[in-house]
Image 1 (spheres, rainbow, N blue to C red):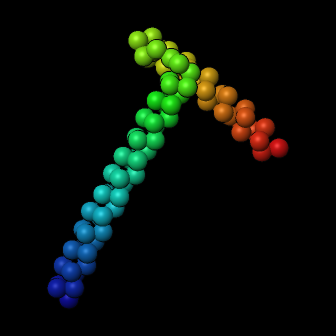
Image 2 (image 1 turned 30 degrees about the vertical axis):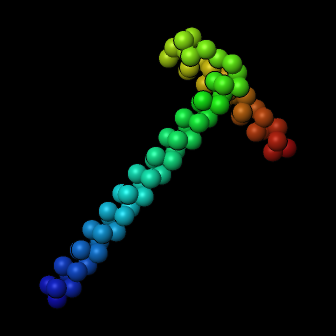
Length: 77
């Protein structure tokens, strides 16, 4: 019985390790997408990196998000 419990615990630990690794991979992929999206927006809008303060980034992000929300709502009609 004890051997079975240890074996089950070992398998559970292995599954937890796989899940953590998968979550890290997902997080990494999300970060890559976010970076590519930001880079593309900056590039397509011909924005100057020197003028992108945190406040400018937040303001621009809100504008882009609102634009996408409005367009998404129109496309669902």
